[in-house]
Length: 436
Ligand SMILES: CC(C)(COP(=O)(O)OP(=O)(O)OC[C@H]1O[C@@H](n2cnc3c(N)ncnc32)[C@H](O)[C@@H]1OP(=O)(O)O)[C@@H](O)C(=O)NCCC(=O)NCCS
Image 1 (cartoon, rainbow, N blue to C red):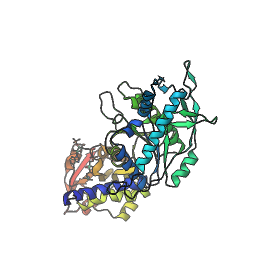
Image 2: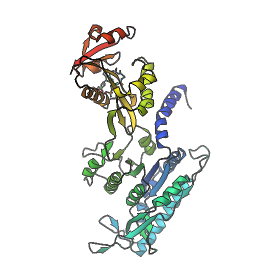
Image 3: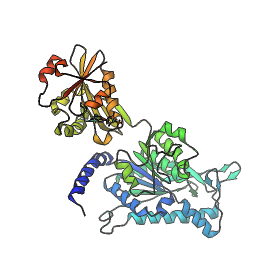
């Protein structure tokens, strides 16, 4: 039951999610997962989460693999499972098993997405799932003298056809297979299909569900964010799981080819997809071409985000109130820090003449504190303060923060004349200053 205490949490949480909802509407995400994710106990809840993403107006392409199901089909027929350099050697008998297994998984996912029982997250949802011949394949051919036969690679993707389906609000479900212009069917690596599709539809996100919680370093610690270059340096690390070894090179290529963000998350955590997409910390690893953090000077179109950031701090008295018009007038005095396209911190520099300036309105969103953003902003303001010998700050709540960063307590009398006259005695802010 929802109690008043957790009702407040719920409301706060729901509001926290709003920026993501607005950012994601109309965006295209490709979700890629192996057959294990579908064979596991969380297949149903994964379908719930896919349904939720679709309901938020996100365009979705799902790409599935079927490795364990293919293995089972081969075992049943008493056929060997043979690989060369990571590729399945697919003769005609093996291909028949591949077709059976892939078909089974496809239908299973389609059924999961078609649920509609009352009292489940799927109630009242009307997801239309479509498949089709969007992937053209070609044979891998002979590698090191070994003929991979019906083992293939992606030759081309019908990106326009996929986008047309997405525009209709359909979820596109693709399997790890493709036809060739000669009319033959080829078994394809799921991760390569996902990579090619994400590039062809210019996806905003490509999410791999993997057998590991994300990319880890040698000590086993999860790496939350990586640039494509940093991820590329890590590929083939000995400590990587099988999925990671296969998916990471595709993730790096997709990121370099312009896919906005590539995420690698574990498939065995309930709700991993939602945690990764709708929280600042995420749950796995996100790979981007450039660093997700950016510090820059503020622009006029940042005003709305700045108001949202500082208003709660003005309301609780931490920051002095700045009317919107004042922000508009003084926007060039502000520097902001962005994380993943969202403004999460700001600071301003007011020059009072005579080599004296004020660091003002330093604020970091509560969900993004302790990440060093405050310090980065302070350094940015100091770097902007050319010709300034003394930098002062007025604060009610962060005295120690500034003292630990080289500021010293001063009296109100030490303020420049004009500022001293405006000093708000009721706020009783502390005055601190630093020589630059
Ligand atoms: C002060 C503020 C900007 C720091 O932002 P931040 O990004 O969390 O700062 P950093 O990550 O660079 O520094 C974090 C460190 O400062 C400490 N810290 C954070 N706020 C503090 C405060 N008000 N007083 C003393 N120390 C503080 C943290 O405990 C942490 O120290 P630790 O790593 O030893 O635990 C942020 O707390 C904020 O927005 N506060 C409200 C606005 C405000 O008071 N602004 C100053 C007046 S202009």
